[in-house]
Length: 164
Image 1: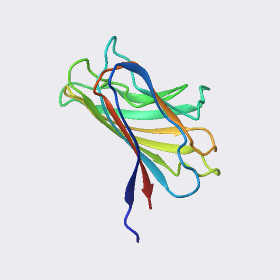
Image 2: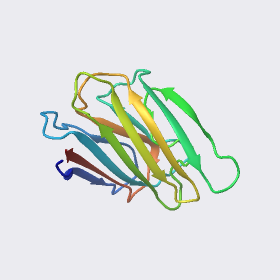
Image 3: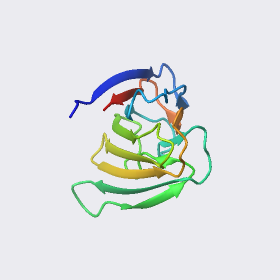
Image 4: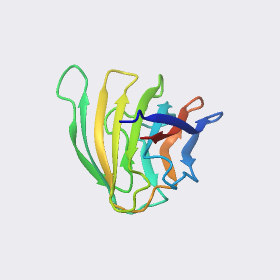
């Protein structure tokens, strides 16, 4: 079995706060099997969830199941659906400290299946979260956009292609 290799495709480090980070022209020629997105993010403004859309699709084609751990109490878990993949449902980015995200988009260039996404979040506070999501489309992913009320200066986003 071959060893998976991560190839850097693009990295964005914010020099000023912004509400959207977009990766476009993602190769769909079959060079890579999966995409890995590594995010270290902080927010400005009111707490909201980080959303991710593929190919500009703003339809209600996204759904996910999530679980959260805080070490105390009964943290939330459940399902969400809507117009984007919610990368974090409970530990949204803090206004101080940075959350770390690892997002795997499996078989992103396949045109015979819906896209599956696995997300892991380490909250700068005291929570962790894991979720599995689906984009109900057979289109190959050639762009993805991340949205938040405002990603703070210094937030970083790195996209990798995985050769399987």
